[in-house]
Length: 143
Image 1 (tube, rainbow, N blue to C red):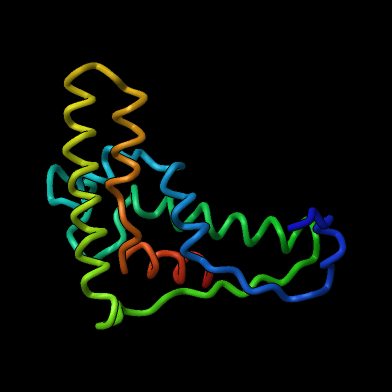
Image 2: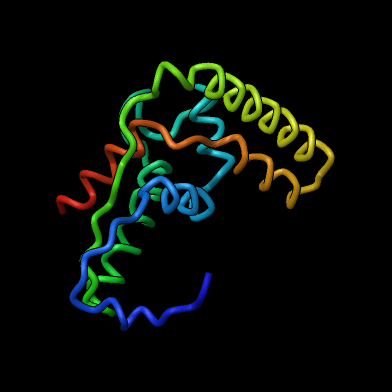
């Protein structure tokens, strides 16, 4: 890899894996609330399947990054969003879900031990990019 100034891409269109920005957007959220909500523990102003306020922050983060590139550098951003889960990745997705559940348990334990830094890290690892978050990004981009 090499560093290239963004100015070099002025006037061009770039494709970005939206999930990479959504994952980074998790850290802009209250990860504890997001992790709890995704497990049906507590509430976040909405029901399962819709975009909740905490989830909306993930989408807002990704949309702001795209807007920043457009406004500041004249780069048109095409956000590529994954569709539904592939049947061939079923086992991998189940394993990832189990890892997120273990991370949630570790977050709760770290919180009980008054280790806020570790708890935040584990809560973030316990979060996933849901269809609701992806839909929220689509709505955010529509304006």
